[in-house]
Amino acid sequence: MRNAGADAVWCWSVADVYAAIDQIVLEGGLAVRVVCKILNVSRSGFYAWRDETETQRERENLALVPLVCEVFWRHKRRYGVRRIAEELKDWGSPCGVARVAKLLKNQGLRAI
Image (cartoon, rainbow, N blue to C red; front, side):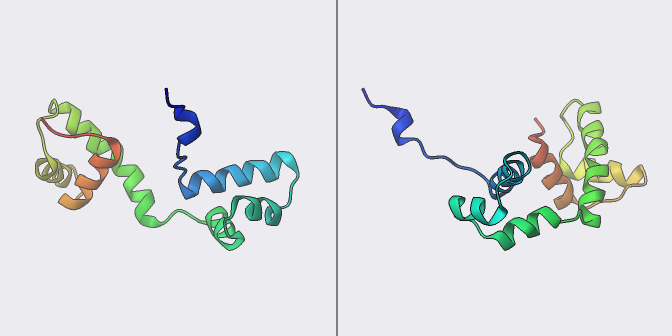
């Protein structure tokens, strides 16, 4: 029988690694330089991640997600991206079809 744990590959996102570094530095009192060196990531990348501010587009997307989900579920998963985009335009929150598609995909939603 093969030991799956020994051959497991860890797939961490960069944001997960940086969040772990942030936590270790805050709680463990270790220097960022040391932790980044151990985990083999750049300090500049960590600091860029830490100091990153939310863009206008990201704020707009966060405001659109509840609206997109409301239209999606109100129509019992039968509305696709085009119809949702059209309804959002009628509600006074115009947004493109590709953007609606991206928001639905990020939420794990798909019309039937």
